[in-house]
Image (cartoon, rainbow, N blue to C red; front, side, top):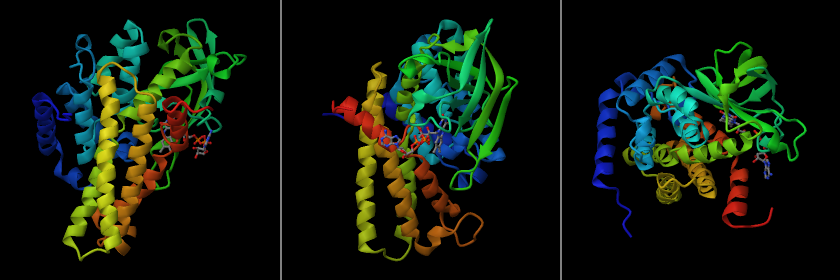
Length: 391
Ligand SMILES: Cc1cc2nc3c(=O)[nH]c(=O)nc-3n(C[C@H](O)[C@H](O)[C@H](O)COP(=O)(O)OP(=O)(O)OC[C@H]3O[C@@H](n4cnc5c(N)ncnc54)[C@H](O)[C@@H]3O)c2cc1C
């Protein structure tokens, strides 16, 4: 069995590393945010950097690597994954998971030609940032029960309702939203439709929510008679559930858990090598975690390989997400233990190691087991669709 990448793929990985080395402004390299915080845009200056770097990535043609050649891509999901793995490891900003990781593959699969022509170029150039309006206060895991309404009115749908936990809604140029177009439909998921939404449309109000780490990445968003042109409906009226299931599979597959976790682990290892000997139990824990990181990588490669072959990973995507992000949670908790008492110090303290980011990285990792479908829901998907177990 040969798990090796081709010479072209290895050369690409090297090129990405050289790019990161060249382009990462030294000031930010020292204070780099990780993948999720970059995508959530909690801080103004870092968000500007995220946008600037997205344009540089776009100029190199690296935001459309997985797309078919006729849309300007290189038809390689593996190259896109190598990019995400490297950028997440180096905590390099610019990769929009909503546009590049979710919306673009969904449009390529379910969008019409008009929609592809209109929206893909902005994603490819790194000019348009996206956000995802699925969850509501009372509809998260049970997404099909969502209450936001979209009612037809001439050439428009008029949206009223409320979404919650929308990452980067305060930053995005466009969003994709699922809303109820048939309240009588049985089962309820057959009454939902999927729209593309210009965030400049009147009637959208955004209220920030701080996460456990104190950062405002996500928001509560209110829709008051928001008019969406019919051409922004994707997949057909009342067919939104099938679109959104694909989006979730892409979402679970696009999170580069290995790069995120491995970098956190490497930080702890570097610190541990430089300081006094650590307890043998902790040393053993670090050894176990490197094994878990490698498993994360291989489980993910399987999902990516499927995407590369034009297949859509389903329970395989859930395996990738649940395992990789739970590994990162264990890694970030262990990083705090390795730092000992210093592990509770945050940014601003001169005694805080690792830029004082260890506590917030641990706190943020807990949200990972909820977003993109909770770990419990992932386990249900794996049990039912992967193992064929009854509901
Ligand atoms: C950091 C972060 C970012 C997010 N970003 C976005 C975003 O950009 N866009 C968006 O639309 N949403 C976003 N979300 C929302 C996320 O998708 C939801 O939190 C998630 O779907 C869970 O829904 P909920 O919060 O309503 O919890 P609930 O569904 O109420 O679940 C509460 C708990 O019960 C468990 N549970 C629920 N049902 C079952 C079941 N059948 N069996 C076993 N256990 C169950 C869940 O696993 C969870 O632990 C984000 C969430 C977080 C934490």
